[in-house]
Length: 86
Image 1: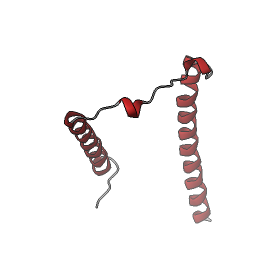
Image 2: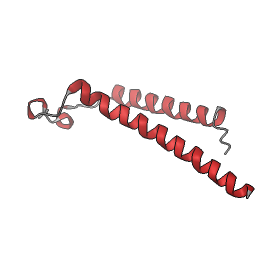
Image 3: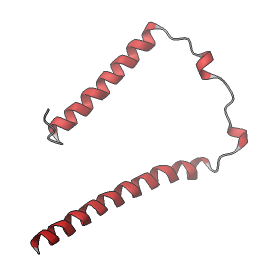
């Protein structure tokens, strides 16, 4: 009986977390829709950004530094707060 109660509590906790993520995703998707309005053909962007872009060494270094900082932040959070050990 106790194991059944434990499973029910775990399921309730899981469904609460899923509900929180669902609400957050709903807020994130509805706010831009309310702010910008419905999509319209007049706001369509018709330029080729890839063809216009001319990469330089500076772009690569900035991207490498940004990715390194992001990775170090994820590793720090994982080891510090999520208690992930490798």
